[in-house]
Image (cartoon, rainbow, N blue to C red; front, side):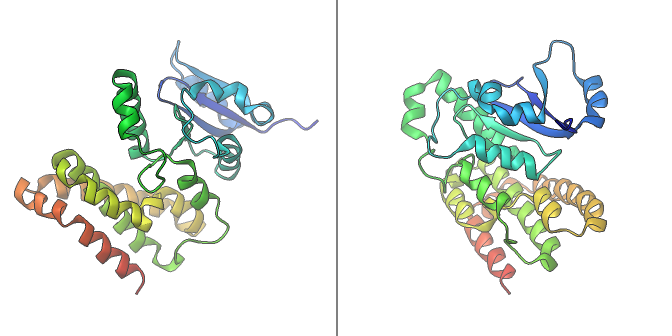
Length: 255
């Protein structure tokens, strides 16, 4: 039997989710040197993990809200297609991929732990348009065989994607009354399905990917800083007009 060249690193330090990443064995010594004593990190061979993923990660799922999702098969496909890319399996049987996904997972876990009846009343797991960790919301676009958008306009798409995500997060934090309308507009848009790093990896030219990733980091920081500098009244107007902004940017992509 051929020896594995890859391993799975599992970080179980967070109760609401566990994070998995497939890495080449040549990177293991560096990774092990960064693991703190007593941390809940386990490393297993890729073949062992594939043979019985339930044994390794099944216990993180406290309340399976997506029994028909085929979560573990989908997770294996993600790890196969995207090495060195971390994916989270949540306590609800969902998939966390973005910063907002992980924050949502922590928030609903806290609610479930402290106020289970309130959790049941407000949960959105039955509505994939509103649920950021609904497995198919990540599996379908990430495992799709055909590009979801024009490669030549990748930079424009990345910039608008980051603007929408950063503004929405800031509006949710500072002006919660606008969250329902903004969430609806966001989930109906293609931006809810686009993860910038993955778009670069899948659609960017190999030679240009490092520059795109560096530019993405700069764009995120500068965009967030620009919004943070706004006075509350100006920001409030932008939050109130968020759905119109989403519509405008989506239309610009189709031109």
